Every structure is written in C-alpha cells, then in structure tokens.
Length: 512
Image (cartoon, rainbow, N blue to C red; front, top):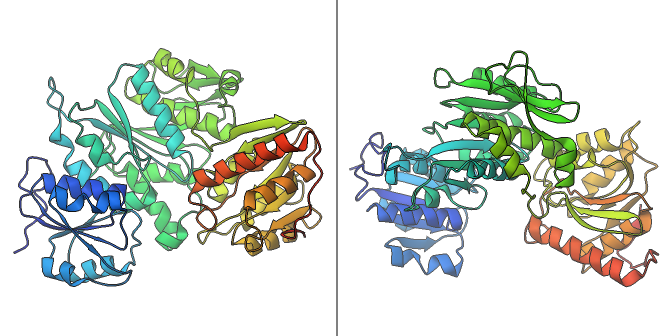
C-alpha cells in the first residue's frame, strides 16, 4: 500500500521499504540510488544505458538495474508499483516513463527536491542546523557565479561546497560527513522544474533568454521553472536590473517574510543594489548608510587584470558579491577571493596571441544569450559559430550582432549540423559579410579547417572568437571537447605557419 510522502522531510524520517524508481544512471542518478538505498528504500534504477562504473555498483549498494529502450515501460517497473519516481534532469516532461508515472498518480521528484528533504543528515554541532543553501540559476553565468560566491564564502572562513549542476551532486554534498556551513547550489531549469520544497537562504536568477525550449516546450515554461528558485527565499532575492523579467519574478515570488530584493547591474546602483560607479564595483545594499554611500568591492581594471573584465563576467562578480554579502561576508573577504579567482576552462579563455591576432575559446557559450555577451566583449571579431541549436531561434542574435550599424564582426565561420539556419540568418541580415561554411560530412577535422579559415580572414587587432551559440553534441563529446579541439587546432596552426596565414584550400571549405 502506498504511503504519503508528506512526512518524508528529514533524513531521520522512515524511508525504509519505500518503493522508488530512479530514472537515469549518470552521476546524478547514481547519487540518488546510493542515497535512497542508504536510507533503506527499495530502489529500482531504470535507464536506457549505463556506464559500467555505475552499472557495476548498483547491486553493490543494494539496488536493482533494468536497461530499457526509450519509450518502453519495463515489466520490472510495473511490478515494483513505485510509491515515488526520482528522475534525472535529462528526462523530458513528455518522456514515456514520466507520462506513465503521471497516469499512475505517482509523485515525481528530482535530486534537488530529495536533497532538500534530506539536508539534515549532517548538522552543525553547535547550532544543530543543517547547511544553508544559496541557490543560483539563469541562462548563462551560473557556474562562474557559483564558483565566485563559494570562493568569497571560503575566504570569509566558512565551510562551503559548490554543488548541483556544477558537477558535484547536491546529494553527495549533504551526505559529506564533515558537513558544511553553506552550500552554493547551481540549479538548471530541469532541476527547478521538479523542486517544490526548497527554501534557500539567498537566491538569484542571473538572466533569462531562450534556451532548452526543446525540453520545456515554450519560453514561458522555461522562465517559470527558473522563477521557482525565488520561492520561499529567506533573506535575499538577487535579480538582474537589466533583465526586467528577473525583477518581475522577484515581485511575484512567495518569499519568507522579511526577504529583501537586491539588484545588480553594470550601471550606477541605487540603494539596495550592486553596480558600477566610475569603474568601481560598489555595494549599496549591505551597509547602514546605503542611502548616501557605498562600499568599494573592486575596480574593473583590477578584474581585467585577472581575466574577469568582460562585461558579462563583471555582472557575475556583482551577483556573487551580493549573495556572499547577504550571508555576512566582509568586503575584505570578497576582495581577497577576487584577487586569486580564475575562470573555468572554455569560458572566454585566452588561447594565444600571434601575429597580432588573439584567439579566444568560449566554447561554453552554448546558447545565443551567452554568445551575445562574448561578442560584446571585443571590438573586432572573426566569429566561429554553430552546432546543435536545441530548438532555439538564432536569428535575433544574428540581427543584433551583425545587422545594420553593427561593425564588431568582420567575418564568420559556420560549423555544426544546424548550419543552414545560421547561414540563412547571416545572409538575411549581413549579406556582404565574409562567410565560410565547414561541412562536417566532408571534413574529418572540423576545427582544423575552421581555424585555417578564420586565420585567413583575421587581421592584426582581431579576436578570433569561438562562441558557438549552440550545443556541441552534434560533432563533439561536449563543450569542453569542442573547446579543447579548437585550442589544439589554433596551436598547431600558429606553430606550423611561421607567420604565414595563407589559407589552405581543402574541399570542405566553401566560401559563401
């Protein structure tokens, strides 16, 4: 007989014997199965495929595994008669397994919902409280902001873990026997879609633009998922002053009484905001005299020396500082963290400068919004763009970046399976712009060809920018693989040309 899940809000509740189907067996699915078996639940993992390192461990932890083709409801699942389904983030809402669960009236959670309910496994010895959560979401900048905020909290002496969509499952963080004061949790729209109980200490939606529409079905559904991060926020709802939608999300959110709205942006900050005045990043939110004074965080020049000077990165710094300051971190600790912080690989990463041309890897710009931010960071660009568009319309990005009056981009190299959409948009908005297509079906090494073409188009003072505005799985293992291959191709080209940037003429290169 199925039981109510309403009382299962603690590690110390009675989870024993609960029949749970776990969908997916990647890093998240395994963390869910491992956690639930530790609690004594009866766990069946259902996956389309599984890496041996996880599949071999499933029976060891006391769970069962069934591999089933997409769209199939395995007999073992029906026989289990699950009381709960916990789905990995990659499962679309219209997946056959989730549709089946809905038809059976079975609740569906994600790993974040489960982790929030179990967060009291390890508590502070003095206060008896579990770690606070600082929740970060947005279309772009999530990982950088999470890492920045965690660095600031660490510099202030807090025990802190960045986790969630950043790569460390939040369930692993809440089960760490040493415990933490605070978790900085990166949350995707997928994870927020299935989260209802979370009550973060502070939260932020960095920005919202078209992305993952193939998963959510519409921009409205995608934005609604993002907005859930503000629900039940306890102290600070941080929002982007240049993104009106994030402001409305805060205004519409049901928060804990007393929670403040804190804005961030690259303009002059008002009271309760973070912003920039004469090249100085300022806090006008967390000081007594905020009506007529501000605290200096850092200068844009200092950030530029650390590779953090791009406008979208400065915005991430301001958002992270707002989150850290809401937790009581001193300005001195924020400064100390910024003095040693470096960006992740493949995020506006400088590869090399040779012959007056700078090569930049921003392979992590996997959607138009991220690519737009990169394009705004440089004055003269040869743009390498394309990949898997994920149902997103690239035309607004092309119009804004290449249309009349826009002179930053001097040439474009188009890669990826969805080239036709990119090329037709460029031809519509910038018909005179030099444009080249790399046909992956004719080319064994996409990046070597793309780099050769970009090198021929570039001139001293240009930046050759890999900012694909698309996912990578059409031609590469992931965005990191794409960026690594780009950098390797650049170094081969620079090392092998001895200053001769003449363009080879392989058959796969087709000027448009």
